[in-house]
Image 1 (cartoon, rainbow, N blue to C red):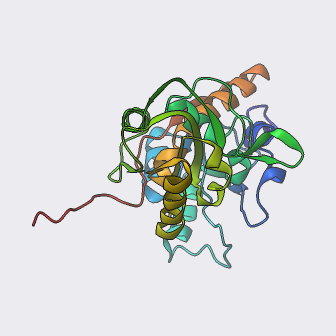
Image 2: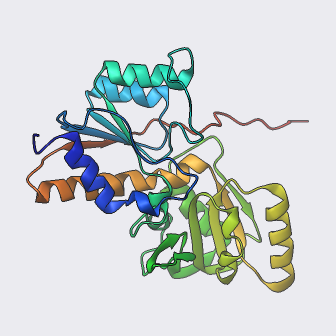
Length: 279
């Protein structure tokens, strides 16, 4: 088997993002592709959707690495009569493999939340909000300190500039004039970490639901807890792609395998526009 075969790339990916770290409900690993085929171009993206497949095929990629799984809940058919089945057929037809690193990338060191923390301006040491049982360096979310205190409003602006633009933007809960120094982040849906984030001045994550966020904000106003920033899910995970591309390509290069990597800039966030009543 050629040293640049897909199997070698998968081995490098799994040395960084061990599938054993994934949650029991998750679906990670190789979705489609021949392990013996050579790989020279790898596209990194958040979502395995048609627009990303178009980009991969147009660029001549041999492999797409996505954060989100294609079949999270399993399937009994990949018939081309469904959007996901059609995507699988299209990838196979063009000899494009698909690999997923999801919750195993979330808890890696460095992982998804490390990249998010750096993107929004945290430059110092980071630690997990909820560490893995077997390794305190790995785990969900990250918490760290800003280089210098700033107001919540200023931090929100800095975070918005550091993240890719989406229709959603950032939603902020808290006094814009409040001074913040310690920041907790979690890429993707993070309301399960609200309890662990109580030690920070502000918690930035995605997909915050009304009731948990409202109750958390009320409790914070009463006892001095963190402000909240809710970003688009896709935007909080996108910064990881460049980290993953760099780590995987450098790891392969150390083994004498040279690949070209590209981070997809296709915005695949589910929300495409917003509207406000003018009356």
